View 1: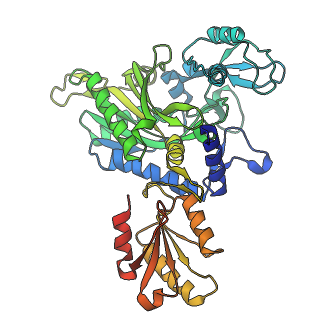
View 2: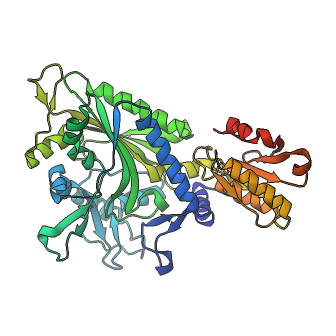
View 3: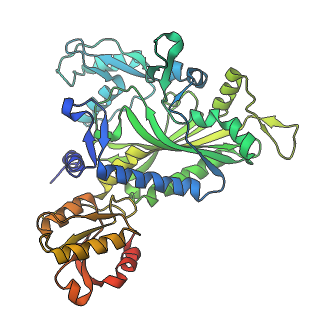
Amino acid sequence: MSTSADKFTQIVALAKRRAFVFPGSEIYGGLANTYDFGPMGVEMLRNIQNYWWNYFVTKRSDIFGLDTSIIMSPKVWEASGHTASFTDVLIDCKACHTRIRADHLIENHATKKSKPHRVEGLSAEELSQIINQENIPCPTCGQIDWTDARQFNLLFKTQIGILPDKKSTAYLRGEIAQGMFTNFKNILNTLSPKLPFGLAQQGKAFRNEITLGNFIFRTLEFNLSEFEYFFDPETQDWRQLFDTWKQETYQFALSLGLSAKNLRWRIHTDDERSHYSKRTEDLDFNYPFGGFKEMFGLAYRTDFDLKNHMEKSGQDMRYIDPHNSSRRFIPHVIEPTFGINRIFLALLAESFHQTKDRTYLKLPSRFAPYTVAVFPLLANKPQLVSQAETVRDQLSQTFSVAWDARGNIGKRYAAQDEIGTPFCVTIDFDTQKTQDVTVRFRDTAQQQRVSLDKLSAFLSQKIT
């Protein structure tokens, strides 16, 4: 009987074998906590991002999109509190010089002893005390010889200009929210939106984290999608609005095809919450490498960000009440955040199926890299190849289509199963006579003959 660890190992192997995810800088021995999305992975990632955007932005009239710069003025991160408070507690092994997050060291040690222990929010001194009391060994060399735990800032520093000096220091963004806050005044001046409204963004964020791997779950750079939903705290109860977005977020997770049994909410403790948040909850997914871990976050950021940017920049970030022009106030904000890489990993885990005969990804059609694959039964028969190419070109007008003429038909089916392609269409010797093709279904491996003139409509009806 396979374990979760076995399943996770198989998922990671499949991801590389089928061009979903490759280790970063692999030809040079790799770079820890970096990964590259391959041809299958980038298609799936784009499908997830497009679905999110359509769900929360395109279909709504109260949320507007932005695409803000990765590098911003360092004053942005000073005002937001990140240069002072955006930290992890790290500890070093004196024997082998391994550096590791103290909370991860404790939690992984406790998990191995089947005594789960969460330590978010504890101080560096408290974490050091637990490590010493439990005699936790270094996971690299096995020695118990640790430095004192201490705080490290997670922001990546960079330099702007030719000559590096203190004045040229900048940061890669540690979250994508700040660009939405710094553009709040621009949105008011150009669109004049009525509260409540949201500003949405997708893009890369960067955190100089020390992690224990777990594939693409926690990396140095990652893809986020989130929005800031601004509202009037005098006319709307933040608790009700928080609960509304909590439900919306949960329904979105279900719409991805994730099982309710693999989802659960977790409330952040007072010590654990970020410096800007009055309330935070995570929607966790049951990942195969360590149980329930954060996939989405929901935070009530109050007026913390706008207020601080207004104070530090000297710019007026207040909203003018359209019904009472003498009333000016700083809106409060609810922030739903979605880890796109973590959705990607959750979908791989949820869809991974293995029987004694085959391995396949039962991906929803909307997220699969390809919707349909087209094969000529034999690659050395020009008539079959020509007709298969015609079918491929026709289907490509509507669907994402893969072409495969390599090897025997069984190996092609196996490859498409592992990619997660829902349908395979084979053009054989009967096609020219009967004007129909064989359609094979990924989930059941069953086949059905379908008329060429009805093929596109048939596939459209089957797509989920």
